[in-house]
Image (tube, rainbow, N blue to C red; front, side, top):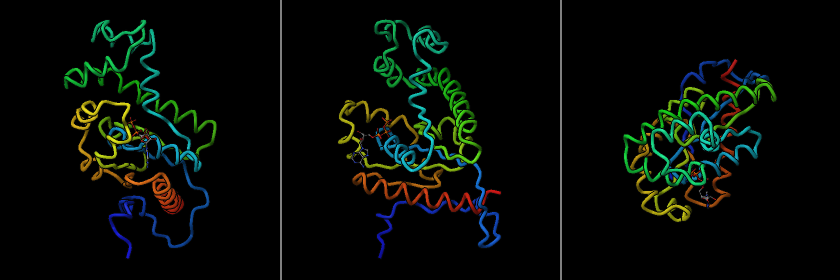
Length: 233
Ligand code: ATP
């Protein structure tokens, strides 16, 4: 018998995707499919997103966009320095660790930072989606690696939400580059994992090796392909 806990991929929610109950005649022309990957800090979101990209998805990295929008002399750069002071600078560049030390210790400051960066990040995600569609056509597949997919309502841009879950002990073990206290603090600030899972169409368990992760990614891709062919006309 399959251990339900080992087989971590939830069935997709039976929402509008199944509205087309026209039997076995599949649409051979599926439309563009956009999925969003989220999960706790260090849970393996990027690793999973790269596996989707290995299997044909175009990857958009919200973290990377977050880095780009605060580069020197950008609009966000100036606003962030005005708000948080020159103490966060290192050779005139915003030092993300210093900025993190400020905002992750004060929820109101985190909200202020998010109010500057999130609209810009979402805008750039939309730009990248547009560019990918222009380059690859309207039937392309896109994965957005977005730690704050649910918190920022970026989920409105995606067809399906994939949550990568990982136990705290493995997160701590795999993310030694961050001090333990920092991870603990960020975990507390993030939307609780249970809440994310409630809003997920698929949950991927990343507590085992990379082979186990890739198998689940492939399973999700198969299900999405099936849903996309059947449900989207
Ligand atoms: P962040 O929240 O910092 O953006 P993330 O959720 O994107 O992190 P990754 O960067 O994908 O997480 O993974 C964190 C670390 O865990 C990386 O060093 C990655 O190589 C490692 N890792 C991810 N999945 C596994 C796995 N199944 N087995 C072993 N190591 C893993």
